[in-house]
Length: 218
Image 1 (cartoon, rainbow, N blue to C red):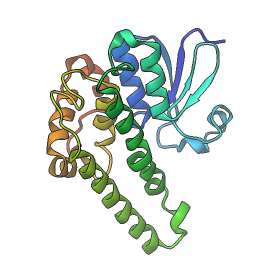
Image 2 (image 1 turned 90 degrees about the horizontal axis):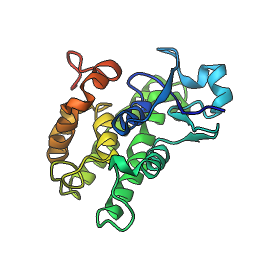
Image 3 (image 1 turned 90 degrees about the vertical axis):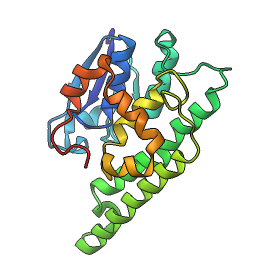
Image 4 (image 1 turned 180 degrees about the vertical axis):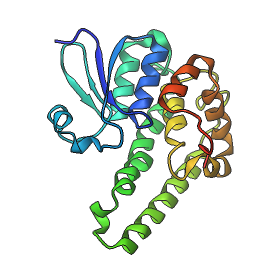
């Protein structure tokens, strides 16, 4: 049985959100990177761990498997409340925290399953695949805009304290349609993600796991 967390993931993928949270919590974990350029579902060894073939996958101390990024983040904040990365039950911010932590995977993150391999739903015709990719990227942009219209950030999305919700938005907003578009449609949230980008506690982590390379914003 493992005596610490084991996180399966890859550089630049959704597992980076969980990695960032564990780093801020100061929790030791073993990172298992899947081969670069290879879809997790195509790795037979990983398929034995998570038949869905998706990352992140987290093995808990004791050996239990957790999948689904939002569920993992919520679990970790419950296990390590001293890190202060989530408003606790009874906190007036809690309802909106749970709302947006559910909204992002349901409305936005799920679109990347469609976009990444459009033939899953569009078939083999290239024109159909391109149409699907165009429509999903607009759906993602619309969902960011809808969230932007309903939040009132302080320094962070829920006020003055950083939470895993800020990490979630910071990472996913770097995917298509990329940050430049995000800045246009979500100016309030943009100030927050730029603050998280620049957080000195995460500087070395971002440089290693999701570097700000030339042209990264779009």
